[in-house]
Image 1 (cartoon, helix red, strand yellow):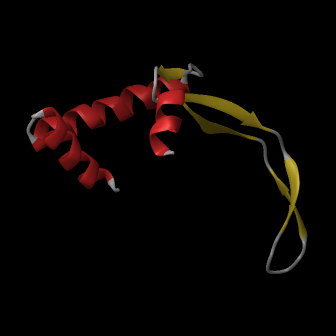
Image 2 (cartoon, one colour; image 1 turned 60 degrees about the vertical axis):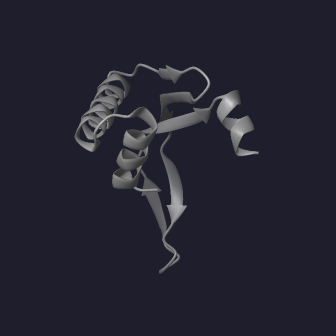
Length: 90
């Protein structure tokens, strides 16, 4: 499912227009991004939680040349699904 398909599904499920569903999805993405950028955790009970984790610098290998390279440390977004979401997928 891509973003447009999600907007259509949200509109059908909620009774909102596609335009309102797009605004709601964009607002959710924006608020979540801003919160994660500050280092906060975003938890949606039953769905899951988004958090930021630090990934340490490490050595890797270029698959084309086999040469060892240094991979810099960085922050990554992690998602942990909630129990309700996990059960609904089974």
